[in-house]
Image (cartoon, rainbow, N blue to C red; front, top):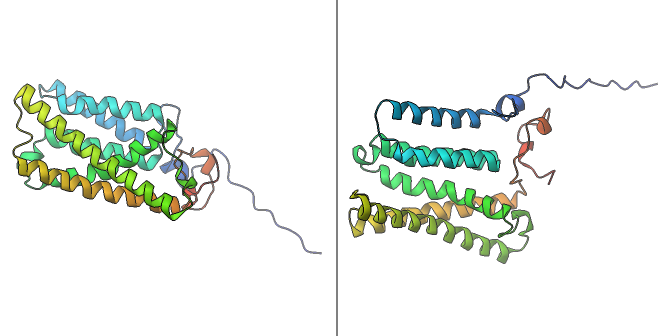
Length: 230
């Protein structure tokens, strides 16, 4: 008679790679992304205490807090944090002036990262469909164009903001027509890349919801991406 050996599951309170990387550690500080958020806000406070201007990063702190409340999927939450660091601290630390190509890098990476974030927010508002609902080639192509235009709109809004600040406070962000056109080109490249990533994401039927670390406990590495819950 063959005897079945049952391997006991790890204790629920044990430390797994999911709990270490994905959380959830506590209701307030869930995972490493919340640690990064706290570091960003703490650095802003410390920078202000030392009599430095915190205007470029103050708004970013509010955006990151709202993202925490919205409970964005981890990939897009991380994307938003990186974008805020590039924009806010790049300005505060003078990277735009000290590094010639920093502006081009930012205008490529920020639309690449933020297009997906805005898509998730529009998805929560039920304005755009779930990626898993895109089953036909023409639907995916249409979504690619929509995401691309969304990324381009982010770049256009950025240029309008720069022009407005130049007009109101005398900043020198939009230095020339060539600078504006170049920025828009890099914005388009970033938006197109983000649109392609989203379409590929839909092909893999991956989830765009933040899944708790507890629900992923003891699963294989990579399985947290797949859609198994709604």
